[in-house]
Image (tube, rainbow, N blue to C red; front, side):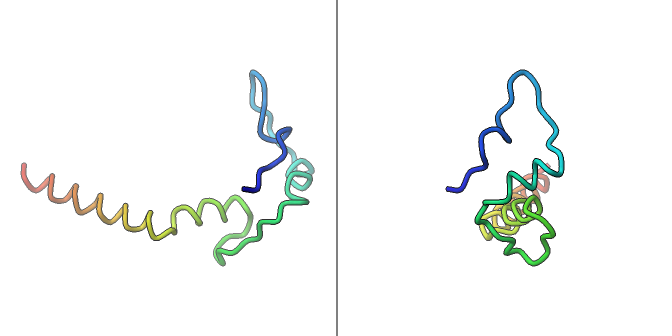
Length: 74
């Protein structure tokens, strides 16, 4: 599993906002590439990759179906 350098993700007692230069430094040796065509950056890639997975799509569908049945019984 590829991980970002600890200095960019581990903070003590407060969060630090990363600058554009920090992001560029953090991503310069990251081998991951954007594979979701709708993604414009790596953050969107992670988000869309999770929400677009077959498992997530099926989970959303099945939860909607279960809620519909549950609400119908009242």
